[in-house]
Length: 256
Image 1 (cartoon, rainbow, N blue to C red):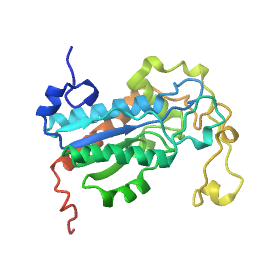
Image 2: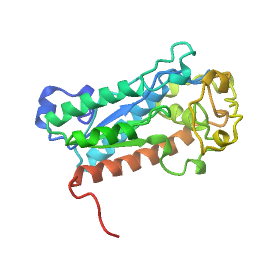
Image 3: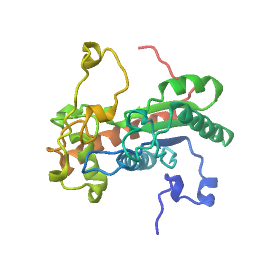
């Protein structure tokens, strides 16, 4: 059985001890309902697969990257009334992130990238608070916001729609139910103008927004579209990991 040296869960102590890792990647997903056709672990499965592909590409270019086990719980405070949507509060996420960062710092790994796959997760404020207290350089990526997705997908949606369904078809097609079983992902909009237009924000109560738990119609999803977007994402993330691995974190700014 061959193992991937950039995946921590598959690595032995002998391999880990002999490898001078430069960047750790922490994929972070969620456990929640995804319409009628995608599994509860969709965010976690996608994050795990995309992190591995990006790390492989970076590794092949000489960057010593290690992908940590994917965190399967995200912020789902607006879905607590949906059966078995499992919530991890931001404060709990912040505590977990701080503990993992401390372990990496103690072990000499000084760069950590959070690869986020769940819209309810937002690590920016956590990083702002944690960064002054650690020597580990922290950054985060929302993979679903990379590149021009509109050039590939007709209806992006933001939960179990065409984009997410297509990527799942690519990375774990055997777990996607036939699209005829999917709901149309109809989303009820805010009644207040500022919230509807997006310049004001409040958390959505999911059962009042969607009947099938999806937002965005998956009807036009295809594996080919998912493969195209996954290639775009993993190429960009690999480029970032290679640059970050080589970077001096004490000299990150340049004049242009």
